[in-house]
Length: 324
Ligand code: ARG
Image (cartoon, rainbow, N blue to C red; front, side, top):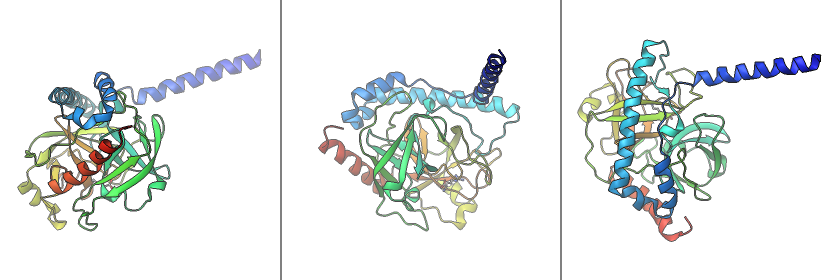
């Protein structure tokens, strides 16, 4: 009898704690990508063509709009409360940004990245410098940094041949998986911005990742995202970032010059910056995080030097490997 009581008590404790854990993330932003995911899975052998279709782009754009609205409402709600996270992000389900991946070195999370085809992931060059492909892996399809979703080994990793380590010029890298992914509402590619496309200032964009919640604070365990604005080069160059030169050809700025200043932070590198449902940038660097006087710096994917290199690698494989 006593044993039965103990078991009962244990079950109650477990369920109460289980609930408590759920409560922590009961407020999270979510989007339903399942329809697009089904189509993407059917078209994964020619995913680049699929993502290029106007009809598909419209869908991504619409869902991006929905996410933007949700983030705005949600951010206002949490500001009223006391959850002041730096990066000023909000809990975001992987279902809202299903292209987001967590890059790890020997299981330790180091950077973010984005799914761009069934075989290729995009990240920052500086995320790939220290490790060999053998030591790298990625977690996909999970909102949690340390569990859930699926882990994949990395077959090959590539750093842009014109990446310059001390200035972070051309900070882009590619990761190739051993076998094609199965797309779902939580694992989905995102289309890269068009080559040479004109980028506008003051456009809303969404940055996501499991990086630090404040400049010298802990990193997120649950995925965070935040809306930030693209910033005109002129303005950005006049900010304190001048001490570290911003190369206008391969970089652009996004963030805010006023408080609160949502921003990416250490650990978010390599992750996506998405606008209008299109991947426009890769988290690259900054001076501290969310300081309000220094915006974040992102890799400019429209730059032909960057774009051609990425597209050249990812499209070569999809043409020669018809099992993709
Ligand atoms: N380099 C950093 C990383 O490796 C990203 C920093 C971005 N910083 C910023 N303030 N936006 O994770």
